[in-house]
Image 1: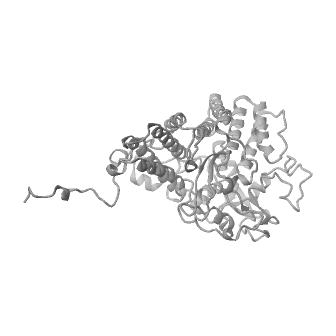
Image 2: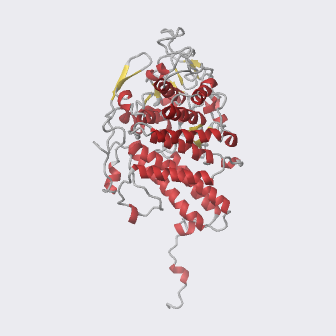
Length: 513
């Protein structure tokens, strides 16, 4: 009887799902594996879009003095109020988990893609470059928010990785830069096929390297003020600028339209997170139009210069009766205010009842009434891409790093004037001191990048969060909404989530958590 058994009956391979041994077989599977490395970008702990009504990318702004998250979505208001802890949950726990999920997928891809038969070697090289870029991005996010984290470059293995201690942060950054250098060597400047939109490019790797080096040179991490770090950051940003002839990068002509679906993948976009309804939409329009959980604050509105280039306290254009008129045009491309028009109607004080302001950036809604079929987009029906890195930011990074390295020079003024020239703002006054130009650059970053989730990280790396986030916040009338707190000895880093420490007791907690 034994001799007569069919050996196929002893097979334990499932035929209703893939396994490690059956998946990495075809080029189509390899492409799917790489796609999974990208898809983590849309997870709630990274840039958001998969969870119901989740717009993590837009809520990041509400951890800064720029906007208010009254609903405490993803625990961002807890962070702004200085109440985050190891059990806060929301983005504090999900960012750790999702970034490591993305890292695990990248690690697996980098090993397994070589096992796939029939692959064009040039394509494999390019795909590896994309995986290196994505792994660098996920590790950059981890070390930026948590500091030292376990550095893992092998495919997931619970037997060898479950109890790893935190790796010194500087070594994690070294790996990030190594990955970005590898990606730069392997990736093209451009893709020709429409189906390749959204893939990482050589320019994206160079641009992210500039951001990493800028953060490393900033006061939070460069406490010794090592000037060579500022030079490295300036050189990295300048390399992207110098490569514009090959990449085609430049400023898109219209500031507001830059963030509309019709103009996605334009020449200013270096890397973005792709959305497409109904396959994978987001809730950007719902949040901006209805929930208002990224409501701009009075402090941001007042930070915009008047259109003559002067602050409201000095400009003859300022009128207390109409305080938001005659401002830098980027205000009108970013958010609304009482008396403005929105979706075909004049805004009253209750339209955006939380602060009086409503965010427009990354939403299709603006002054005019939208088409009927777009009038009330709801959960995950929006498809505006979220821009992670754009050319204007490269110019600002160069200006900041070059000013810190060498002091004011013509190239810095030119970079700033190029950005301001897009919206017809006056040129920067020449002859400023290094300190005064630093103030100009920091304000320019706040205004140009408002609503894009950058300012929270800027005030952390400048080590000014202890001032800017120990404050009262106000609505458009100047009524106090809440008092925010920031502990300079604790809050520059997030806590290691308790759930992760329960799984891995070798993880040492950050100070004072």
